[in-house]
Length: 214
Image 1: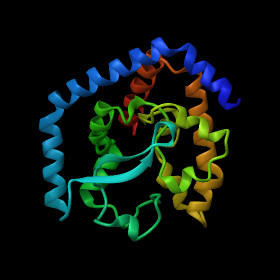
Image 2: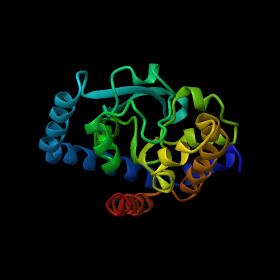
Image 3: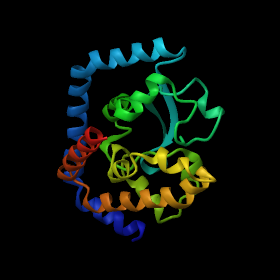
């Protein structure tokens, strides 16, 4: 499917996309108000466990190729991206003790409520990638940039244990680029075809169930 086809699908769903954005604003705003005690506890745990900032702000590529800085609770040592790959493999030595728990429970992603509130992200949408890997996208794959990236999506659920998959690879980054990234993008394409508030609700519930099962 080409860009014109995806663009046509999105154009037909403008009212649903507007409702999706309204839901993002309302839910993220309410969630920040309700969850602030938990967010504060996470911040304190990070500071006690390892010196450095509470948040990790990495450049990602968002809607229409516009770069932004994603909010994540820091789960690795300071300057971890300068001490290894931009992907995490297995029991990465750069991950802190608190960070390991946050990653397993996905609590590190709660900071992205801020990105959702300001419109850089949505609750559901293709996970935003770093520029290094987006530069490798084909024109077909770049279609995922036509919508806001999300906190969760089909790929986030299917590859929630991605670190373990990469751990046994001889060349983890090559495996990510050649196998995992294309598979994720195909799952993103599936979402683009059914994008709607109802689809978002189903994916959010599926994400919660997957996290609980793990």
